[in-house]
Amino acid sequence: MESLSDTKWDAVISGTGLQQSLLALALSRSGKEILHVDPNGYYGGTEAALTLDEVDDWVQKHASDAGTSEDIFSAARVVREQADAALPSRSYNIALAPQFVHAKSELISQLVSSKAFRQIEFLAVGSFFILQQSSSTDAPPSITRIPSTREDVFSNTSIPARAKRSLMKFLKFVLDFDSESNTEVWKPHAETSLREFLRSEFKLDENLQSYIIALTLSLDGNIAVEDGLRAIHRHMTSMGVFGAGFAAVYPKWGGLCEIAQVGCRALAVGGAVYMLGTGIKQVVQGSTQDESGTTELEIKLDNDIAVQSRRLVQSQEQREGSRRLRRLTAVVDSKLPSLFVTVVEGAPPPAVAVVAFPQGSLCAEDATFGYPVYAMVHSSITGECPNSQSIVYLSTIADSNADSALEQALRSLLTAASSNMEDGGSPRVLYRLCYEQAQGPTSTSVDGNIINMPCSSLSLAFDDANLQSVRHAWDALRGPEDEETFYMKFDDREGQDDADDVYE
Image (cartoon, helix red, strand yellow):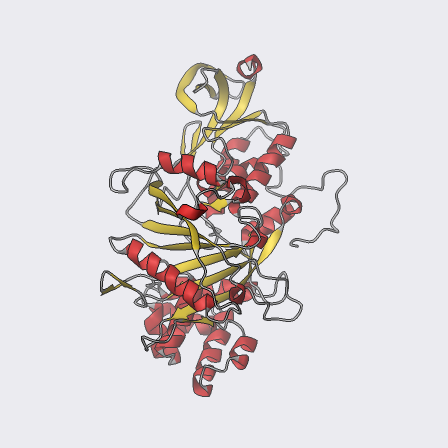
């Protein structure tokens, strides 16, 4: 350990969340002396995927009330069914903040150009559904697949012919929404409600409006026209990029946490030193300058080792603003096969299904719940649970009725998904994890030679805006004395070639 103090570090990176780990990937061929530490005993930060034993430790740390905590996570608790209290811990990888990645995401492009994709097994995110409550008290809720291509619309038997024409008109408009002629249509309404725009401009009824709003993954259901059109355009143009029948992918073994670990492994191969379970206790500006005139930092680790570094990169994991998500993660003793049907010939088996509960479709405490609820259902193909089970990740905007709405959504989903199961049984919930996640800072700040990186956004699909902070930090670390290098564009390491697929 003494060698840590003897080394003149170009940078110390604190935290292995997605932002810092993508920065690690970007620096992996730089030849810099880098020390990468994390106070946690696992990789991933706020995007971590944890075993059940790790979840128990995490819950103890984040059990404080959401109204008093400044942490990103709060109000955490675990509920186990008594008969299933001994679930094998290491058979599970519970993602704290699961996000899928659209095929057209810049993140995918960077993982390909940096060759990091070779270390990741991508799985298909299958159908997007909407759950509709029955008007009859005797009839169960139903799950309807959301049409998002021309073929989907033509094959749908529940949409009347006239409504199909209106929907087709809108889908054609979205595919070319940034053309000059189409911009003239939506630009005057850019900041107004997408729902109203769909009604007035395309004559879509409430059901079809709900389909479109669900595809935007809007957390509050009140997305504006410009943001909504961009989100739907991304979804539609991503369809079929990596294969028939799906628009997005999910990394096996824990989602974004797997990408974080790949970034860290790349930097370790590049010569960095990694220390999990080690945080930073104190940072002071040193009294000496290096050859470029930069005052070195004296950084004391919480194991009492002191190191010197030209720069420090650290995460900002404190809440900022009022937006919070309430999350419910449930382990279910069923494969829920009806959600993972391959709908296009030649498509890979889906590992993830997305189910939307539209704004106003749920009741909580005898009142209509005012926000949509989203469920990301993961099959065992993700490597996150045993073969006979699945995991349901539910989320919604946090308010006093959010817990009731999430529980109702879970019950409705399991009822609808099991209504056509051959054995006629009802899936049981074996395990529940409940917590709140707040939004942290969303941009990078630089204070001298200390770089503060943000957390990822709360969105359910990866937001490419997160990549701007990584590039900002990389530019700050590169320095004018470094030779010109290409950001996230590397040649293959010896023994690899371009014959590998981007996903499996």
